[in-house]
Length: 114
Length: 111
Image 1 (cartoon, rainbow over the protein chains, first blue to last red):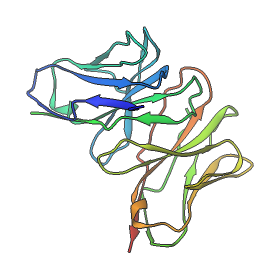
Image 2: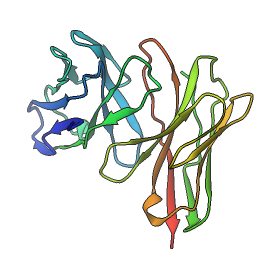
Image 3: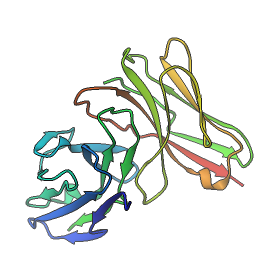
């Protein structure tokens, strides 16, 4: 299993541009999460999904959108990028429906908005 | 969500046992305690989780007193490679719970 994969690894955007951060997991996990991590800070939840077709907002959803058309994929869309969205973005998934189960994290996408 | 409080940073020498305590005064009956480790430029990695008393795995031990208002992650005989940020999470075991990571404890191991 590749686990959780994210693309791209790095990206530089200009203010106002849009992009999609890709996240794929091959473990057939139902629960998937998007976090952002600013320098020296903890992770903040952006959006999460409990299964295909079901998504919900986390702590910091403004400026982002998600979709979950398949179990495997959970893309994060940035519309009208702003400097405040400069961060490292992590995708994660959990096996089953027990939230205290291990979260498997991807390697992250480092995004800079200039 | 149960709020957690951890020390911001800790230093320790190689070979020593390190204990990181997390306070979670408003933990609920259905909540579990989970710890993650994060190295620079990597996603967090699961270390251990528990509900009460003591849990041990090949990496760490987790001590939870009877009132469950705090927990202590114990790392035996640390090495330089244990330098990382350690996060304590309190997680409800059902429902659409929003998982929350705090700022964690930055552990620095000194040679």
